Structure formats: structure tokens, C-alpha cells
Image (cartoon, rainbow, N blue to C red; front, side, top):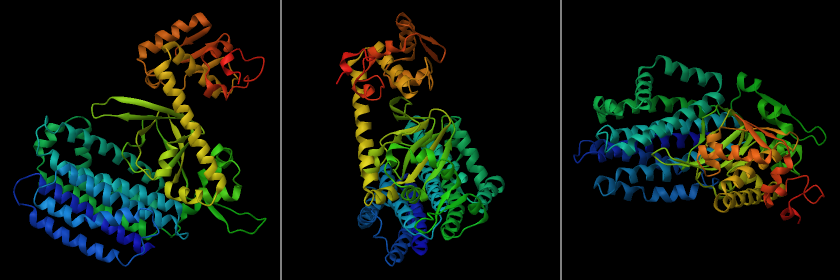
Length: 517
């Protein structure tokens, strides 16, 4: 499998270069870059011929990937004749060829038991990071040729991609072994190419788009980013080559567990997974699953920490991993290029992020961001789908989790469309009270009031006024703390979804007749 993975890494690299050259060619009406592009077509075709000798059909992503390659020659004709837009060209290479190729690499790596799970995660995050650098190369050749006004959309997309780069780089550096991490650190510290690009990205992040567009020509941009891509490719090849090789750092971060009762082979888990195993085993998703089965499921899992404000994944990104919150709060939202947000959910400890996407092998329909410092468990989507086919408890639990989430969304929709602002705020406070286990009359708001207001579909000032109005019912707010003189006052805001979690339901203590069923 390592041979197949290395060939696919080479193919991705060459296709990324073809995409960049096509973008460079389409930015003008001349044939200045036509020869270079045609030469790259030939190099990619040679790579595709090499690929015929490797087994890829084990991956669920193989068929759509193979079908996309059948259309490659037709797309090239459209590019050469300029009958396709730069954005459609970018979309074809990115979504139809490169993204599934990365998915195939992950599938092949995961199902080879000789490979280290930590190194697999490291490689996939590295490839995602490198892909964002490649996207910046392609988009940048378009951006630097336009004036500030006509390039507004490209400017925003570049900012988005740079942010993604930083996110994937952080994840890679957290997972990389000592050798790879030091190699990247050395490049970032001493390599002139890395330093120049970092200055460009810093300038773009500060809003100096016009300056960058004036100072850098498209050819120079392409050459600079291509040099970085070549350096990253060498690092990626090294990671892929050593997927099955253990090193000292990996040994220190892996704990072996063994089922001594039946003599099963030991299962290697990351140290952070072992430390959180008791909590993970009690999650509803893993109910009924034995410790041995759970450890097998978690052998490719990892636990990652995200600082407040960090993006976890982005809308439109392929859902390569399944996430669950170990600690903290995560905001799921849709955004537009103007910076407007619609908050769909705020997920907390013990809950999963977008379970239904896992079943469809789809892209994320929304973005996820850490509301505060967050700890997440993540498992490769392909692996957990495979496990669901053989583990009935996992499959049933997943369906139950999706059903529960659907009920919550229906309840939330009802709150936003049918309830007054007072009822919405009261419902939120009751939900928070139940989440805390009905133990305290003093509730701390879990995140910023502006975020709560957005979640409840109102303006921050409306939320603040409503909290003040609730004083008449014995509900007092002081900064980010809610004091309940009489917690039963919250029962007026109960609904079907919340009543199912209340200890008073079905007892004489329940004062809400709507909950007596």
C-alpha cells in the first residue's frame, strides 16, 4: 500500500501544478503559458499510467475519482480553447480529482494495519495544508492581475484559504513526529521562499491587498508558490514513506492495551485517548460496545485542542473526520463573503458534530469554530463507516444520535419561528439548567451574550433587555451569571424535547401540564 500512497502523492502534486498552470494560462488572452501547460498535461498522463498498476478499488472514493479522470481530456480541451472559466477549472481539479485522491490515500493508509494511526493523521493534515498552499497559488495568479474592486471575491477567498492553511498546519505540527516537525520549523525559520510567502500572507491578512496586487506579477507569484509546493512535496513523501515506521516520539505517546482474558493482540492507542477513555466509553454513541471493540474503533482516533476562535473545519470542506466534543463549546454556522453569520447550533461536551454528514460521505454544509478552548475527539470517517457495517450497537447508536439531533433542530426551529423573544430566552436558560443537572440556582452563561443572541435569532441588545424583563419572574442576570430565585419558574418555557431530560417529568413536582405525557 505504501507504493500506492506514494504514487498518489506524486499524482496529486502534478495535478496541483496542472491546475496552477491552467489558472495562469486562463488569466490572459495570450498563449504565453500554453507550452508549459501542455507539457504538464503529458507529465500528469504519465502519472496516470503508473497509477493503473496499483489497487485502488478498496476505497469508496475510487469510482467517482476514476470517472473524473475520464473527463480530464475533455476539460483540458475546454481550457486550451478558453471555453471554461477559471473558477470552474479550479473547482474541477480541486473537487473532482485532488480531494478524492487525498481521501483514497487516507482509506488505503487506514486499512493497512502496519501503518501508525498517528502518522496517518499527520499525513492527511499535511496533504490538506499543502493543498491550501496550492489553491493559494492558483487563485493568486488571478488576484494579482485584477484591480481591488473587481478582485473583491478573490480577495475574500484568498483570506479564507490562508486561514485554512494555518488551521491544517497547526493540526499537522501537533501530530507530526520530531523529525518532520523540525524539518518544517527549519524551513519556516531559514528558507527564503517560506519567509517571503509568510510576509505576503501577513500583508493580505492585514488588508494590504492593493499593495500585494501591485508589487507581485502573476508569473512571480506562481514561481514563488511552486517552489514552496516542491519543498512541501518532499516532506510529504517522507511522511508517506515512514507511515509504518515507529519512532521514539511515537513510542512515548502510544500506550499498549491488551485483552488478557482472550489473548487478543494488543491495540495501540494514543496516550490522550487512554487518558480520556473512561469518559469516551460512557458516551451514548458507544453504549453497548465492549472495551475491546471500542479500543479497536479508537485506534485511528485522535484528541485535538483548539483555542477560542480557531476554525475546526470549513463549509464546503470534505468531511474526512467525525468529531465529538470532549470539553468546551463549538459553534456551527454558515457565513458569507461579507462576514455575515447564521448560527445553526452550539454543540457542547459529549455531543457530536454533524453526524448525518458522516453517513453520506459528503462535504460539511457549515463551518465549525471553537467558542472557547475546546478539546475534540475525531475519528476518520471512512473507518467509522466501515465499523458501522459490522457493529450493530454502533450503527443503532448512530441512528439514535441522528434522530435525537433531528428532534433538537425541530425544537430549535419552533423556538425561532413560533415563540416570542421572552420564550426563546427562557427556553435557552431552562436548557442550560438541565444541562447542568438541575443542581444549582446559579447558572454561568457558557459563551458570549452576542453568540447566544445569534443562536436565538435576535440582536444582542434584545437579548439583554429580555434578561432584564425576566427579573419579574425571579430570574436575575449579573454580567454572565444567571441567578434563579425559583428554578421552577423556568418550567413555563418547557417543551417536548426539554421535558424528556427533566427529572420532574411525570411527577407531582412538574407544574407544566404540557409535559404530562
